[in-house]
Image (cartoon, rainbow, N blue to C red; front, side, top):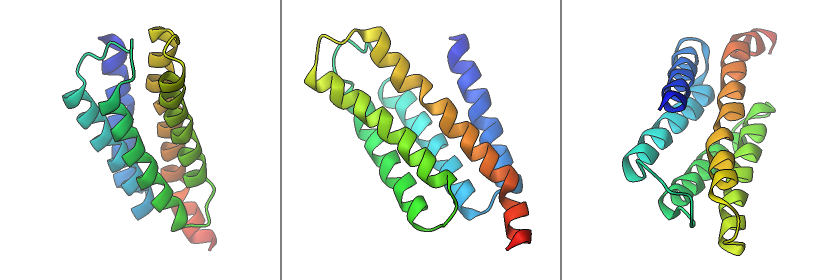
Length: 136
């Protein structure tokens, strides 16, 4: 329960910084993470991770498409990084589909903790958004 609270704290800080300091792409990425997190909590409140979590997989694919769309709209590096991190999450689901003997713990850890680098990159991008606009 504490890890969920920590995650949502980091998520809300990310959204707040993106809204306050970020541009439209940073806000879009932060809102994508927020919506995906809330949807995941609603459709899979207590996943077992013993078999493929199709609801979470579907949400992760939608997030990948959203991040990819953001990446296509800019020349900055961070959208490509968050898209790549999200793709790693997708590959975790695909590996579980291909190899059902993968234990629940590694599968869940990959799916859960991949979000932190994504949020940190959105925070970084939001903080540097104004500097890049001034430099351009």
